[in-house]
Length: 340
Image 1 (cartoon, helix red, strand yellow):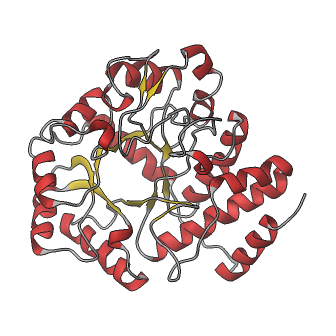
Image 2: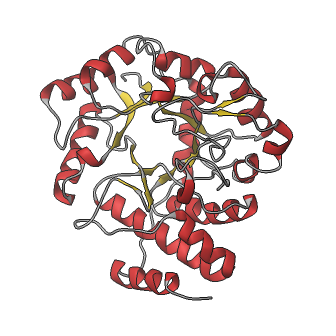
């Protein structure tokens, strides 16, 4: 059996060129990720997900997307429904926990069904980062709440709903992204907050949900953890904080290694992320010349990573809801319209 390479890759458009098919077949990446450029309509996305899996000969190969709700959504109207941001759900939870849990469950269930319908089986959500006053809008309303326990409670509902409906959730951005003052898509953020404060705030949602199957790290330098390296390239951060203090032992992704925050030598960017402690590197541009360079010297997926992936698969099941999407959407809309 061909060995799996520990990387998730994008593709350039709504269909696969023959060069892309040949490259993916030869490389055998762990999985794939889709963006808006790849998603024109449901039938087209179904064909694309089938084609991607066919290239690696694995019918269960994971295909991820960022479909948080709110401004982070790759499947967009009018062909797919629009969903509210996590923060809107968090506000309802803060007003009434029972109604909030119901809305969060319906939100996650509707997204899960929508993704499964087109062959996507992983969502890079929920966001466990905190809302922080004065921080960059990079997170903002993508967060559920300011309060760590509220974030953890709401995110737990999302994780469980996804796992019960055939979708691998990816908690992000471990160990916490909410304090950044610049957007890592453009430049590298630095956080000066002391470790004691992080332990009693930002780390808490991740610690409470450390049994989640998959997490994504972040391109942020925490000066009190490792002043020389972003989390994504910091062995100390992975060993002492993510695997140590937080206790996360699931499958760990890097954040997108094409971001401006970690721009550098394409030949070494994936190896640096893996050597720091990520199980799977993420490279999303879909540009074949870049992917050839990034993947040229990749090792095989490690035994530890494979074991973590096996555990994730054991956690993920598929159930069918008795309610139709229209009924669930109407109930979600009703809940979000309440003035409590």
